[in-house]
Image 1 (cartoon, rainbow, N blue to C red):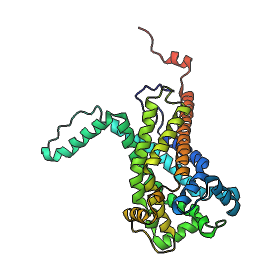
Image 2 (image 1 turned 45 degrees about the vertical axis):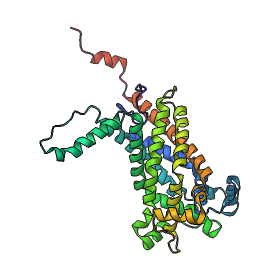
Image 3 (image 1 turned 135 degrees about the vertical axis):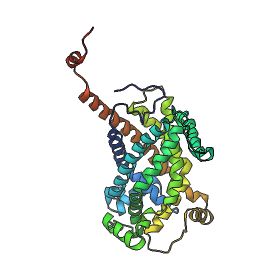
Length: 345
């Protein structure tokens, strides 16, 4: 495969390779991370919705296994969640690469002389200057690209996130095996709330995802950039992703709790408790205390560390494999090279 230098971004280094390699590698990363972290995700969502739960992680798993239908209950809502993770990761990694390439395109762009009044040209020249300034700092590029990718991936897959929350919460309502299906849930949501219901808590999700994914990718890039290991190694990528995922989730966790409360309210048949993102945040603080904003933090950080680390490692492994196959199929045979070389004068 092509050789990387210390300054290259391992997530956007494509060279001669097709863009779909990034999409496929992202989808594989999302699917693998979901299957690995589903039981942790279930507990995390329930702790956010029911902050009074005092069971330990292992006792929570045992209780769900015993009362809600065995091992399958730990993967409740897995179809919607898998669609979410596959779609999210595919969009995220692909959009990250495109955004990073776009920012870097301003590095060697010469100032354009526009035949319009300076006042009208100022927005464009100012934007160009900002992009060039960001492009000089690899960590800033990673933050902006990660934040943009996170917003795009969140908005494009958010309805599946609502479904995932509904399935995770379904066992809390009836205390046993759930009969809720994706079709039943979607039909009921459209009847009661319309398409708007599938984006409940969307504002808090965007507010959370900008710093979360920005920090996540920036920290990952920083760790990989100054790592002594090969920047395309699966182990190095996984370790950097684990650290980045845990730290970034820890910093923005309260907004994730707010998002889950607003999502649960959307599919609940009771009267609305929260009027919006700010009202939900202040209500939790007043009635439950600041600690409630961090309920489920342990399984969440564990899930984020494991899921993000595995996601970056799986992405690197899949992308490296695809590039290796590409190189093998497109390499020129030595005898062909000799035939194609021009005669010496």
